[in-house]
Length: 472
Image (cartoon, rainbow, N blue to C red; front, side, top):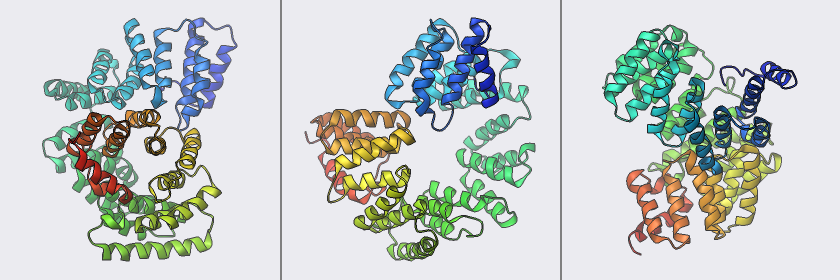
């Protein structure tokens, strides 16, 4: 599907097929392509109903139609079980094509079913010399994660023989080097690849790949070199995001404050500062004097920027984030209210506003639920938004709905510790104390949840629940 659908030109051709005397098989393919094109975009869920209605024209559905239905349904995290049933029904009728296999692999990996992903890829890889390098690379990754060392070695040898100069091959070779501790060699291999000779390619390809492979020092060294010796756009912002991702909040904040104004518009700089400050509230910071100095510097920049652009929602959101990080909930709510009044669909501000309306001293769960319900319609059912919606319904005592919302969030991010804490809260509210204990122990013992990774306003609830585990 993805290999043939390439935008509006292709869409026009497929629409023309539907009104022509083309064969039934070609019309079926056209409907699948058009349906996929409707949902293969950031706001694809908005078009889910129309895509399914279009696909209903393929009746009775073939295995390819069922697979496409499953993939379209899977966009809605509330209906992933329905999606899985459609995909599994199709699998009983015919093996997926290579294109199908790539889409199904994405589905199974998001569903935390690595064994099924490996099975689908392995079957699709039986195509001899016609197998795409990307498919073999995914198969190698799945086999590595499943501990199938001999199979992974064989797959990498096959990938290297079939596509010796491809970027996918280089990445998988580097993955093996990094796994055995040869991180410097992995970096050399990737930087020696023909596709990464230019600085922009090293920033956009090599740095994130090294980071994903666990070659953190090598990625940072390359990033610093690019900052010092080139003028590649985005090099400074990449450093901010890199530091934030690796839990180096103070350094990320320093780097964000130092972003050159001439190169970074105020709204972009504000978003990067927001990302740096969000996981680092004052109460969770050991060196609060240092934190205060950095936040004061960020605030001074923000005030100057707001003087020029008082209605910029990114700046107003940062204002709320800084107030919240300082512990001034009322000021944070006021800033987020202003941002949302200007743009109700400003995701960060609306989510933060709803959250503070739930965990603050004067909860307004009804309004918070309304904000989140409307935001999800436009932004989609993203995990963070579903978590806030679940909390709104939990506060109202609607535990079944809260659990359903949280299940939808966890279907997308099953290993986020804070979501298991939220599930423990839901279980406790529903008087399922055994379920509460299991969820809380998973959050803390298996996924490493610590108090200071939560918002400070949730610390008392965390401490109380942790003390209650095992006391039924």
